[in-house]
Amino acid sequence: MPLRIDILTLFPEMFPPILGTSIPKRAAEKGLVEYHLTNIRDFATDAHKSVDDKPFGGGPGMVMMAPVVFDAVEHVEKLDARAATRILLTPQGRQFNQDLASEFAKKERLLLIAGHYEGFDERISSGLVPIEVSIGDYVLSGGELAAMVLIDAVVRLLPGALGAEDGAADESFADGLIEHPQYTRPREFRGMSVPDVLLSGNHKAIAQWRLEQRKFRTKERRPDLWQARGEETKTNKKKNT
Ligand code: 9D3
Image (cartoon, rainbow, N blue to C red):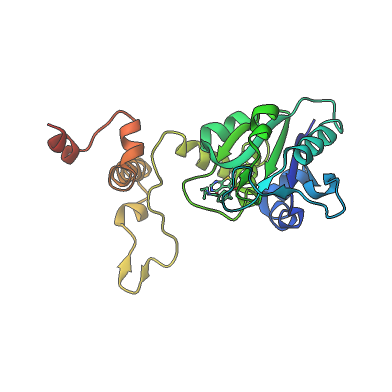
């Protein structure tokens, strides 16, 4: 049974260009995932098709109305018997990461709600009890791109979504080290050459060099990841003592 992903959004037209490309497209073609888009505006009840309104108590911006979102969620959930894991894309959510992607990849059904206003009426959170997810500390114009980031990260984890080579590459990131430098032809380019070890044919020496490079780069570029592995740089040791 394919993973069913329902997407509730005011801008459904943003999704097909991304979901119809590359791995998200191939995963759907292989029957690993199904995408179902629903326009939240279809559930507006007034003549103007309103989906948002001014905040009670005043303040800037508009707030997504609870009744429209509840109706959309309840309608979409009835389209399939399986219970959906509800995910609300919001800057106030838990920060998305690879562990959360793995968690979502184990589900049989996901329901993503993407807004395009200053916020959601609080009763959408308190009443639908979604998992609230952010993709990082920067301001987007809406939840749609965040939803697509999440989908891309989840779908590539579905068994069979990747070629064998890509899959192995992802596993090497799971150890908390960033990638080693990579080179391809030509051997010499504008005075910059490929490290000799990579041309040596000595596979053990190459593996050693790559691991060394990964550790060095992780210390320098991602001290947060390095610390999370329970290791410490010498400079940090000096600073801390
Ligand atoms: C003035 C307060 N703003 C919150 C930081 C208001 C606001 C700005 C932009 C509220 C919503 C948005 C639209 N962003 C999202 O819906 C969103 C988002 C994001 O902006 N960054 C990272 N992850 C996400 S998930 C959804």
